[in-house]
Image 1: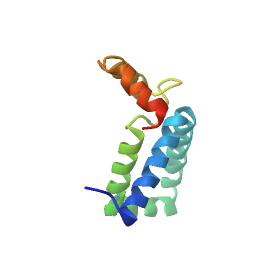
Image 2 (image 1 turned 135 degrees about the vertical axis):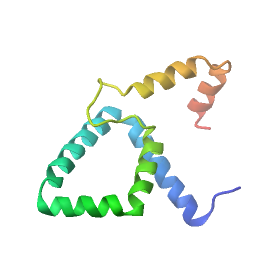
Image 3 (image 1 turned 90 degrees about the vertical axis):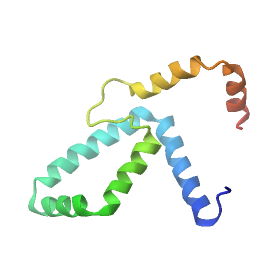
Length: 112
């Protein structure tokens, strides 16, 4: 089923976000960790506690989490486990097992 109109634009935006995340995983991890720290500190304030209550109750929060998990491959945590999220190394190891690896690499280089 072809993607058209607003769905196409949303898909393009999500693909661009994912591309940026995969291109700069260490920077994304640092930003993610900083946002978590800031969010936790803000939640300790009266205004932050109110925002936390609203966010927990909002249906869109679960959807936002789903989007983040899909486009980031669930690779980022509150604290960095090393210089590169292990999900990227796992994906590389899985790619090495592909019988048609050379074909896949050629498609990647060609941009297909």
